[in-house]
Length: 386
Image (tube, rainbow, N blue to C red; front, top):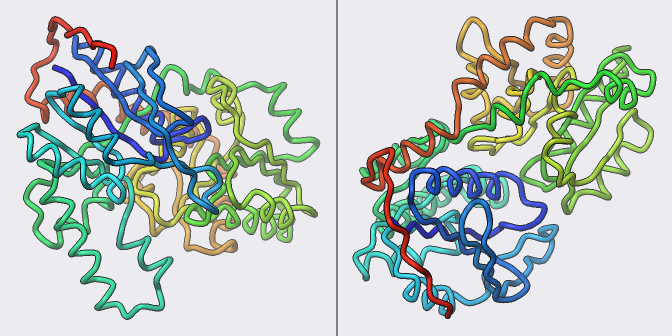
């Protein structure tokens, strides 16, 4: 089976989208399928990778996005898809790639789209001045249109699925993403690294994620400020870059905060996550948050926004959650972080919770949706050079 995945917002410093594509590709290849992923790039380029054939198409950079790119020409994209003649099409972007779903239906090719965002949350955040009734009508209209253009809609959590369920979308599927349980592991805890990062402080906090408005990275800094005011000796390490870099650096200039920027080496990131006491995931619109799950796999409990999906991943409704959720303000985050710092047993709980999520399960469910049986070995078709 030839599976082609199209994704915008994929790039050298992108996080969740890139990880998802790579893990799906590696899983599909493992079961004998062919995987091709089409992403934005500086020019047309074909590259064979461990995750499948990567094809980059010329792109444009969105102003003010901190480097996010989208494919420049939908016509070029559709011409490429016609040439590739896929058996299945997957899409990661509900906004700019709607035409791919239409193309697939016209050509009688099965298609699916990942809803990586909560449209309801985005509209509320960026268009809150519009009356609620009008916002709701727009969100419902767009979600119905999305569902009608693709054969299947994938939501990774109940939180992400809610806005589709409330309008009765019948082709909705819930498939959780996974985590690399070998790469992200409590065994990566490095006491020498921890000591170096602490710089004399007692507790190490970590924020790993893109510094963009929808992620609310300022909340982590606000939490540190409140903790310091309360006499809690913490230090925060921020991993990630983005359009708010300068703003966050200015905000944290007089606080025990170190900004490391984007780190491409995933092994190094795993060491940082495992060496921390608590990870902070303040994004209020997160529909999954892979970095939070990677923190749990590393044995590090997480404090997340109560208005996001991360509470589901933390199993927050149980008697033994792998972290805590907080209201969307610095004081609430500081309070919840302080509680977790007192409970060292949470490291075991965090790891056990992460073990419920694996990329193997994700790949199996995706292949079931594609109508394939596992394991399956097929003869790969040879891709001619365009």
